[in-house]
Each structure stands twice: as structure tokens, then as C-alpha cells.
Image (cartoon, rainbow, N blue to C red; front, side):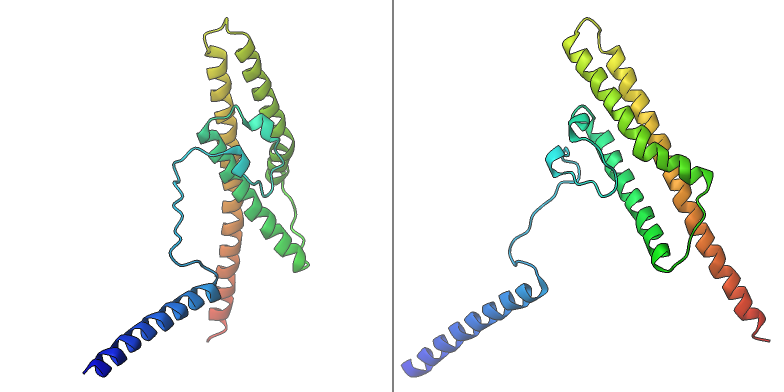
Length: 185
């Protein structure tokens, strides 16, 4: 009887040990660490050290005075600009040259020239207000509101450009579908 109990214990331990080793090997093979779950709070304030810009070239010093909402909006704009640039790069890889319209030119100028200039102005204004406490914050509030309006405008223009690209490709698919259906007769 004790032999059966011993064999059962050894078998149970062996199955548990090999199963656990296999479980960890499977997770290592797919590139994840079992048992480690990191929670990322999407509402936690953004840290400037953790921000990585894909397309926008912004000075982190000038971003210190921005609100969390404005930082998130800049990050969202950067993601959309990255999508747009990836699309343009794919067109170039296919040897397709797309004509740049006025809206795309203006958007490019706003993103790469005017936006950094506006952030510099906002930063200097915030630093002036910090050193000159005679005003009651009206200037800072107005500066924040103006910058928010500018960010909203840039994001709206960017959304318009991306929507036009989507609509253009959707229209090309419709034309191709109609062409194929017209030859089915």
C-alpha cells in the first residue's frame, strides 16, 4: 500500500513539475512573462519622461507647462501624423506619387513649424506669469484656452485629411467593384 501511495505522490509531483515547466516554456516562446501583469491607468497623468514622439519634434522643456489634457491631445495628434506618414511611405514604396493639396501643405506647416513656435510662446508666457505674480492668472487662462483652440484646430484638420484619404480609397474600391460587375454580363 505504501508503494502505491509513494508512486502516486511521485507521479503527482512529476506531472505538476512538468506541467509548470511546459506552461512557462510556452509563455517564453510567445514572448510573455506569466504571472506578471502591469496595470496601466489610462487616466494617470502623463510623465514627460515617458512620452515618445513618433513624428512631432517637440522640445520637452516647452511641454512642462501644458495640462494633461493638452499632452494627451498632442500625443493623439502625433499618432495620427505617424499614420499619415506611414501611408505616404507606403505610396512611395509602391512608386505612386500623390499630389499634395493646399490643405496638406498648410497642415504640414502648422505641425512642423507653427506648433513648436506656439508651444515656445506658451512656455515663455507661463514662465513670465510665474515670475510676475501681479496678475491673477487671467493671462495664463487665456493662453491655455488659445493653445487648446489651436490644438483642436490642428486635430480637426488632420482628421479631415485622413477622412479624405479614406474616402478616396473607398471610392476606388467602388469603381473597381462597378467595373467588375459591368463585365459579368
